[in-house]
Image 1 (cartoon, rainbow, N blue to C red):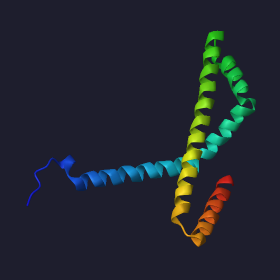
Image 2: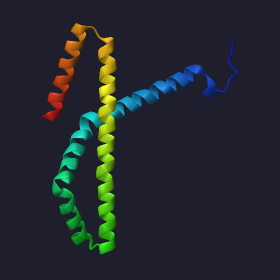
Image 3: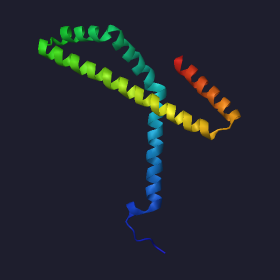
Image 4: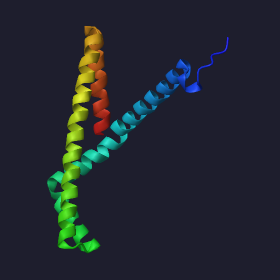
Length: 127
């Protein structure tokens, strides 16, 4: 028996595409979490500790910005810091929610092992 539905309507193909998409999203999230988050965190602390003023002054000098351009650049840099902080807070909320859901699934022994695994991962990330 041949299924006459269009190829993209075939449930097997849709499930395969969904699985590929979810695997890619997971791989991307892990890459960002494990690789790039440290770089972003360092850059954000730099911006919080007066680095924005240093960078803005350097941009003014090296790019020969007009006062209006410098004001606009400062707005963009401020927006970036605010946007990044908001994203970081959202990511923390998602992590906490996921952790809480996982903890509900596990028994007490498994919870302790899971918490140790998380602690080990966090220790490795700090290095």
